Length: 156
Image (cartoon, rainbow, N blue to C red):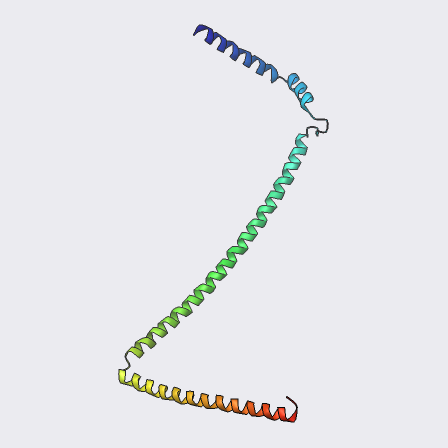
């Protein structure tokens, strides 16, 4: 245990000493010169960095303003859509009440009245079906006659 502890302490002291030496200005300058690339830009002054940061902050602020304007526009459009839906909903609710009243009224109609109404409508439908068949047949006869006449005349 004694030798391991001594080696650990020597390693820690050596690491601390080398780190302290490496953090001194002359060593840092030498390190920077050795590690700096030939095409690397020289370090900018505080005012130049501050100017660049100001420009960057201005651009970011303009972008935020643009996004906020778009969000405001979308919110207004959604508000208008909600108002339109609310108006339509109130109209549909009124129509629902009206239809419920009509259904209630029709439910109170006596059954014989409904049967009589069905007979009246049914006979009218039968008559109109017969009339439709007669008109269709007449149309076939007339169109065939016209085709024959045109064929005889030489136009068809």
